[in-house]
Amino acid sequence: MNTFTSVFEAYDWDSVQTKIYQTSSKEVEIALFKNKRTLDDFIALISPAAQPYLEQMAQLSHQLTKKRFGKTIQMYAPMYLSNECQNICTYCGFSLDNKIKRKTLTESEIELEIAELKKAGFDHVLLVTGEANYTVNINYFLKAVTQIKKDFANISVEVQPLSQEEYEQLHQAGVYSVLVYQETYHREVYKKYHPKGKKSNFNFRLETPDRVGKAGIHKIGLGVLLGLEDWRTDSFFNALHIDYLQKNYWQSKYSVSFPRLRPAEGIIEPNFIMEDKDLLQLICAYRLWNEDLEISISTRENEKFRDNIIPIGVTSMSAGSKTNPGGYVVDVESLEQFETSDERSASEISKIISEKGYEPVWKDWDRAYTIKT
Image (cartoon, rainbow, N blue to C red; front, side, top):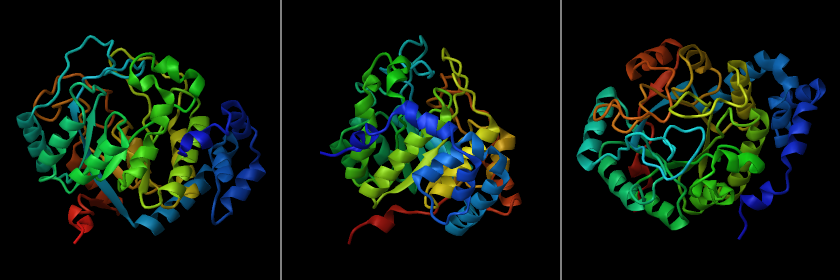
């Protein structure tokens, strides 16, 4: 059975990295003047040689995003259901070796969190948990989705990698999209960041989007944890992964997110610093390479960056986010997965989006659209 692994193994990290850093200005200019861009063009656009062309890239990114998505920004909120986790990950506040209070929301607690998010206006919710198969497993997810879907038009999940059959169950239950991040595509150092737990299995995680695609999930979200390894090389492999998935599971939509390593309890310092201008370059590169890709920015980013990126390429933003289970109402002091940077409320973000001439969209999709008659 073919999976992305066979494509991935045809590439070598060091060779890709060398190619990126040896890109010339002429190659960047050729990429900028194309109407349809390839992965080789993406390499040029994320290279250091493209930095002097950032203004031009931003203008093109704005034009392409406006043409494909209009002047709209989708609003969503994460709902953390549990911080229990069986993995040791050196960059995460939920890591098993952090001796902190663990919490998994009960049905009544979930109801309280739902009420708070609905009061803020949200209709799109992202359910997030740690990776603890003995408590937050498929049975817990199905029960939570069944409870939550009566109040939200769109449910996404970011949980541990599951089997194809389990993703099919989530699809039937009403899950619209699944987010799964490889964290880093650098196989040789992956184990260093994930020394214990199921997440230490590089290939099983790498092939998760294949299982999601085979299950018929409407949208698949990818990304890398920016700060673990060289962001340019990791982002090429992430784009390679998206390219493969679009060709093989063309019925699904695709999104990319840009989690930058943020402070959290007991985590490492970033190995590679990614400046705001680097993230801007990366967002523009993705948009110029792939017009159809949905691009999401979370509250990890600072207020100034989030305000300025609105017209340039993003299609969805979280707001007022809490990254701890029960963080909105139930248990505001429970351990966060990471610190948020932009702590403004949903109404404040909505107002800023409107002031920039864009429309904050709270609901643009309904489960009824996919009900078969």
